[in-house]
Length: 134
View 1 (cartoon, helix red, strand yellow):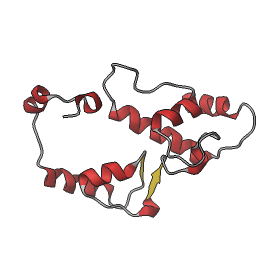
View 2 (cartoon, rainbow, N blue to C red):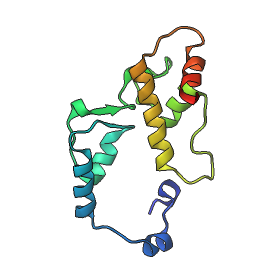
View 3 (cartoon, rainbow, N blue to C red):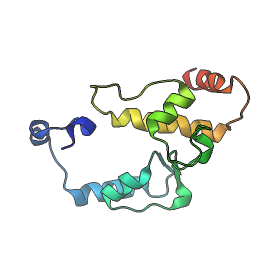
View 4 (cartoon, rainbow, N blue to C red):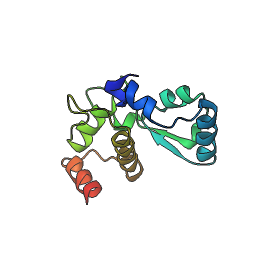
């Protein structure tokens, strides 16, 4: 169940209503049709669902080189690293169950930064943080 990652254990899995994989795949495919897909390391999610999505309709923060910290220009960054670098925030505290909604929100915040531009002037990260948090 990968409980540390999903928060799901055998008891909670058995207690919930389940959807067959084919139904889930169909529902997700329909929801994505014609829409921009934003996330981090999207290939993992699409692979798990056995789905494809047009590359021009995806924005993957893991692959966006302009988001990478200067000391890591080639290696794929984790979502936690990007959130720490751009927003000076910590994700997934030790002992806390992984939160997929938190991941989705973080990827959308990073996408917003990509769309509004990433100037490399001093203090810009703090300004960006202010814009995102209001």
